[in-house]
Image (cartoon, rainbow, N blue to C red; front, side):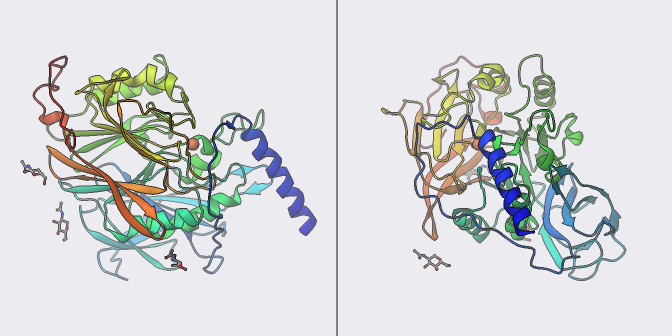
Length: 441
Ligand SMILES: *[C@@H]1O[C@H](CO)[C@@H](O)[C@H](O)[C@H]1NC(C)=O
Ligand SMILES: *[C@@H]1O[C@H](CO)[C@@H](O)[C@H](O)[C@H]1NC(C)=O
Ligand SMILES: *[C@@H]1O[C@H](CO)[C@@H](O)[C@H](O)[C@H]1NC(C)=O
Ligand SMILES: [Fe+2]
């Protein structure tokens, strides 16, 4: 057995090298902290890796994994602990293989309709521990936590602790989750690490390059683990792919884009994006936010230019729709740009934020270009996470919280005013002069 597992180890190491062959050697990422492997600490037969995600206006998808092939795909839930009345829903299950690895049973059960801003207690598969979550409110205020490129290191644990230490409604993750990089057991370990957070608040994710896991001929389309484990509400937003979708929550329309699928003007994603944005009612949902993995604006040597072809294809669509802000990951640092369109400051463009500093094993991207481009307002290579608190239809507050060792320290902040409330940018009356203030955009 030991021999077999070391053979497997070298096999995955080889796979890993093949996947990383394009990694650029020009920048160094010092002081990553060690990877944490999280084991299954409940009886083998019990549900593990529980996480939840929003589905439509008032439903929640509960996802978990069991090693037991006969475990039931049911969720029992209610608004008091231990009392599930007769609320029990049966869902579906899937599983996948990746070379010699076979996943457990991956259960997906959608429950609801649920009341907004309400705590629900639930149990998966008819046994095991009780979990609870709170649904997001249906009106402002609402607070998003935003963290990219998480991985599963001691830094990740610190970021998660800071995220969990102050209440929020849902988490947005712009790609790069487990850093399993084809070593499938690391997906399980990641699922266990995030369970205490992802079972309590919805986690809405999009894919990064570490989710691809393509292997020529055998797994030519990739995303096997990601699509099986992190099913997002793509059908509900008329998308045909789990790699891009959108959802509405409390007056915000959130667009999750795919950096690693087709995005050219003749692609499904492009056509879907145009149709999706055209449907947004800015009276009901005054705010629009978009997430991508590879940043369109980036003044770090790391991954320079990797988002450029997607930017050229799609930037105009977001600009014309007056998207308020775009969050990306990929670069392991924090950077905030002013309102930008077509590489120039533009009062009617989104603000762009890179928040790829969740704490993964590769460490930080230290090499920022000098001098800093004028459109880049704040940049720092430190681990941390962001918070977007939308107060009402006109005002939102963005803040970045650096991991100062064990403490979380707010190091950047900004008041944002919505385009829906802007006379000069909305609707379609751009090109007019408008002044921007330093700390309120
Ligand atoms: C959500 O519930 C909390 C506690 O019950 C309350 O203080 C808060 O105002 C509610 N939020 C919204 C947006 O309704
Ligand atoms: C919106 O929220 C901001 C920040 O709390 C506040 O200053 C402003 O007065 C609010 N606007 C309305 C219309 O309530
Ligand atoms: C951070 O927290 C860990 C465990 O909670 C503790 O062992 C360590 O000493 C702390 N480090 C600092 C710098 O406070
Ligand atoms: Fe990445």
